[in-house]
Image 1 (spheres, rainbow, N blue to C red):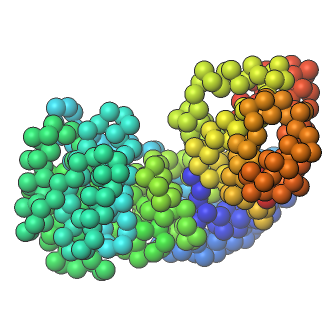
Image 2 (image 1 turned 180 degrees about the horizontal axis):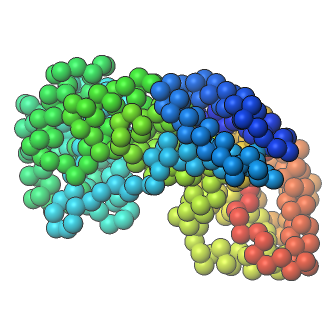
Length: 447
């Protein structure tokens, strides 16, 4: 999950924390000075000013406690307080999305403004829960936007998920869709409703009417994180006039300032349930306030990294690979497999950013997403014996590999040199008895 929208905020807070750590003791004066910088950082990140004031009042109240002022590590204690309050600001505990008890069908109704990403999010939710054994049906109730029905049908075909469509009034389509889902024995119904460019009475009346009739398990407001406080005010309007149970942010991997996600829970009183972190159907992740707060403060998110690895890496194959590493039998076939496993886990900067402290070290570095593709092409241009025994790759073989993969001989030489260095490192780990030291996939291309 790449949360580039929080990068700037994280950098500014890190500067404040460095200043606090530099003080052997803290006083009311330097706490107040530090919180001024925190305030500026939050406001520049487009956090609602009322939310900022309440947040800082709470932090200041706890930071001026006797325990902090008399502590030998006051800076660390204040960071801990900010982390705890940030978790609270983002919603506190992670709240999983709700399902009805079977055999009753679960109905999720997605609402929001036009262009927020509702239709795509419907498909992403369906794709996510197909994996856990659910039988979803999508209902196309967005009759305002001409391409919405076609888009939902195309996504349904792509995912092999049924889509109910109809004409007339959106409420009639919704009722007929729920009935069709019951006949098809679908246990998860996801309703895509219409949006408008702005909040208006017609839109509110339409979605409120559908909600009143089909009684969804969850009414979910879909917000485009790139629209900042406009998303928050729209969410507040929907919460007040229609009633919502949770928020899904789309485009959270973009370069917005992050203030919407830090404001919406306080403004609406409902949790953020999911975050859209990319354009692919699998790019939708549960929102964990504690993990997000840790990422913002540069503490990484190892738990999410492990979960990603568990979803994509075969445990038995990982044990086999570990044994090869310990015996220094790792070859280009294994290297290729590890690169492909790594690719399944998502963009490199997102993965590495989950490691504590690594995100900041990567700032300014070039993580070339095409480099891995070039490496794969070179390895695939090798014959099986060459992959298993790289030492036989002489000059003429290198020329053939370069031509076959569309790279230069220098690129091939660089790959083989890097691989040779890695093999030597494996042997050193093996001699040192570092069991399990290399379970993390290899193939991290720096450009």
